Each structure stands twice: as C-alpha cells, then as structure tokens.
Length: 200
Image (tube, rainbow, N blue to C red; front, side):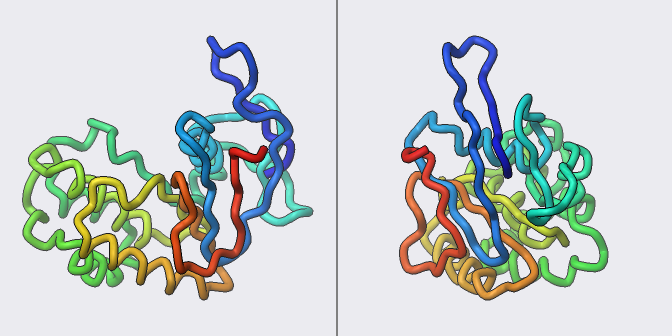
C-alpha cells in the first residue's frame, strides 16, 4: 500500500494521508485506538472502498490493483451485512468457500463450535456465532491475503484459543498473508509486520 489517502465526506481532515506499508507473507497486525481507521483500511485493502489517492499493488514493482482485482485476491467478509440473514449457515459456507478448499471447513467448524448451527438461518445466531461463520469462510477461502477485523470480539474462550492456534499456523506461511486488525497486537504471536495507526 503506497501513499494511501482517505477522508470521510464530513471530516475536517484526512483519516490517512500518504500512508504506506507492506503486508508480507505470514501474519501481520494493524492496530490503533477507536476511530483510527483500522476497519476502513481493511475495506480499502479488500476492494470494498476505493482510495482517492495512493495505490495498492501485489509486490513492490507490481501494477496498481483495481478494487475488483483486490476482491479476487483478498478474502474479506462483513459479518454485519444483513443480506444473508435468511440463509442457513451451511448454504452460506458453500457459496463463500469454493469446492477446492471446502475440505478445510470441518476443522474450522469444529474449532469454532459451529457444527450445531449449520442448518440454522443466520439471523438465529448470536453475534459471536455469526462472526464465527464469516471467520471460517475467510480462513478457508483460497486467497493471497485474508483480513480479519477484531476476530476475537464476542467469541467464547475456546474459540479464541482455537484462533490463536490457527494464527500461529498461518504465521509460518511463506505464500499467504493474514492481516488482523485490533486495538493491540495479539500476544505471543510471531508477527511478520506491525502497522500502528496511532503512530502514523
């Protein structure tokens, strides 16, 4: 991400101004206080928003990527989106995770305690279980980069422990990147990079 600029319509100053950083293979974290732009940054990276300034590329010498290209490269799902509320969890996962990587789902479903919710419509799930569905979909989707926004929020302790173990596995990857956004970097995890928005 090179020279990114973003400003909300009613804001008096930019949220980002000439923001640049790299996301290498492994696990990275973007951290910062409330309102510093963690979620906005993930949406820019995932192609859900288009920055008026700066560029995002794959590799230092690669061409700038369009939002549609980023959507193909980056795994990101909005757990708060009501569009899938009436769909059963099983159907959502079948739609979001392609056949070639659906063999990863059983382990994720077990680790996140989702097996008993597969045939329930999404609206019947608690906030934590709803978030787990989209965390599982993100981690199982084949991608160059996966992004998770405050993944431990509203989750039970066993699921948080499972995610820590999963992140430790991702930290060893030399081919894919996982970018986590949270108030603080996760403890005990070997990070490939740390982007602290409070210091930008």
